[in-house]
Image 1 (cartoon, rainbow, N blue to C red):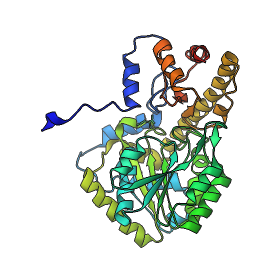
Image 2: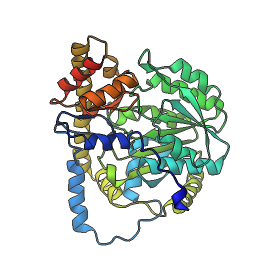
Image 3: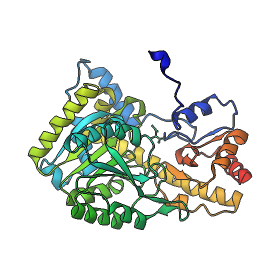
Image 4: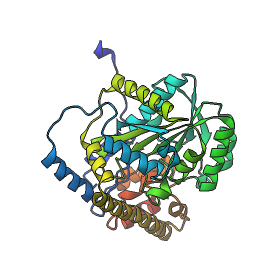
Length: 395
Ligand code: LMR
């Protein structure tokens, strides 16, 4: 039976990263997977996480399962981190949450609950979006429609196109929005634009489904959640998938959280029961290690302060790299790359053709996705000149 199955192509992001790993060119530049890398090209462990881990190793007395909704400190901390400590919805008990295996697990749980509520709800996704949204959410059984989002000519959000397309979103459809640091384009909505989306959701009755995987890496923890919080202050319902992969560096620990803003505390409790049943059906219990560490960081004042400082330094470094890259690219190509400065988080499209991207890979060992999405955090002082000159050479 199994011999009837064909080999499938590698994942476009992870497969490319594997090819890059095999490349023996000492000058290779890896701009593939969205992983924060420091000046020496290493994805570091946060000091706050190291400290929490030391305490955990000393104190841990059991490896028994976590409860189905996961670690309580983690859930409480994540709800406050995302919705804001002063959120009225939180105070009213209108937000329930469940720990999930990474942001992916959270997206999946969110989709499972949405499907249980309305199997024929459409999910509106930005064009483009993170490619894994499709299999993760689509395999639940929900159908997709696309809304215009990124305008490759102006290198910014096509907000008129987005609004025009979303006018067709019906009551109880889900509109998948990137909370900040849009993956793959880095172009985010302004607060005024979030306001328009809130008006539309109120008027049309669609439900925002927010993927917030990069909170703290755009402008700051509160700034990056401002759009989401604005929606939460005005709408009765919302689904959120949050991740600690990037902003706590817990990538391999699969630490995420699905959150449900509901009309009442009773509804939030009912939805949590649905989420727990979905989790039990999929993987039973969440992984403990990363969430316990994140829970310690979020509940301990001193660890929390250390973490916030580390995260802010990362965020500032990425924004500094954006500026340096613009200057370096403009100097070597004579073209305008200023849009990279206006974008947020780890990703931007360089606006190169697929042929340019292939040539960069084959002739210069510079690796980026076929769409010319780069991970800005893969740039550093020792590769920026090489990278800019290679781009100039293929242009
Ligand atoms: C990315 O887009 O590179 C990251 O979100 C990692 C992944 O799983 O694709």
